[in-house]
Image (cartoon, rainbow, N blue to C red; front, side, top):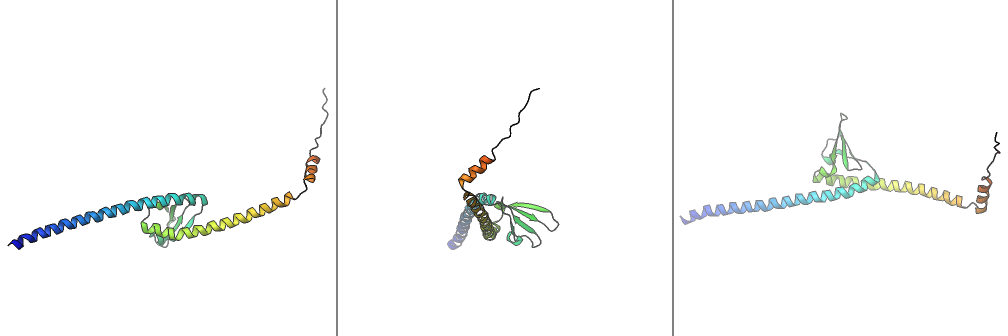
Length: 165
């Protein structure tokens, strides 16, 4: 009979141990969720500064955020996701409110796209600045005496005599 008395104690101890393990796991999941929120907030705030400065909007594949294919999704510079439905109604989701998988998908897709857009923008601006720099260089080649002569030649003022009545 002593062995029968031990069985309920053993089962009770195993149940208590299982509850302790459950609490430990739940605390670890809670801490990871809290860390995930902090990391996403940091990522969101840092990325938002860059995307606002660059001012690019990026079309993203709707499947990246668990939407059907017939929906259009656009990541805006403020990191809002504009969702345009087939009936042309729209809604907005904030980047920092997405699931972990959706956030990862958008980062993997949108960052390389934004980098390419920034690169093209930089190259265009560089060409325009080079053009203006070359123009300024050509204008500096004018002789300074001719420049002064041109200015003084245009400085003549016609003065008319005003008579009093």
